[in-house]
Amino acid sequence: MSEQQPGTAVTPLPTGGPLDFGGLEAQLFSTFPAEQRGRVVALMQGQAAQLADIIGKEINVEHVLAHSVETVSEEGEITALLRIVVVDADGTAYATTAAGIRESIRLLAKFYGLPPWKGGLKVKVESIKTRRGFKTFRLSPVA
Image (tube, rainbow, N blue to C red):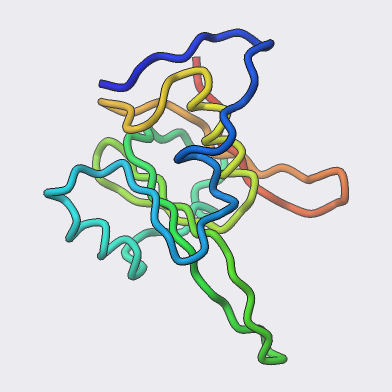
């Protein structure tokens, strides 16, 4: 059972530790128990739907997996990205590299405790525009 975090706006967001995804070059963050490592490998190898395909829908996030991936542009440039997989309580997995999801998970952990969220944490998947006009996604808690 995860420890519940205080729900105040004055408490700083977690930095460092397991949810500071910024230093994840060739690393892995997973909330799955050790006996499900085969599932983790399968998710890392792409067995997940695209989070972008369920914009506007609600899901019950139980587990979170984050790992580094590399993409190659048409010009041949290699870019390192963080791929985040959120897994619904029913086992359905959704993947994205959107930075907004990273921030959403940090905020959710601050107010609802660290994942895994037993039975799922009900969130709505939203598409938003950043101040610079880019599109990203976020997970907003559903009351």
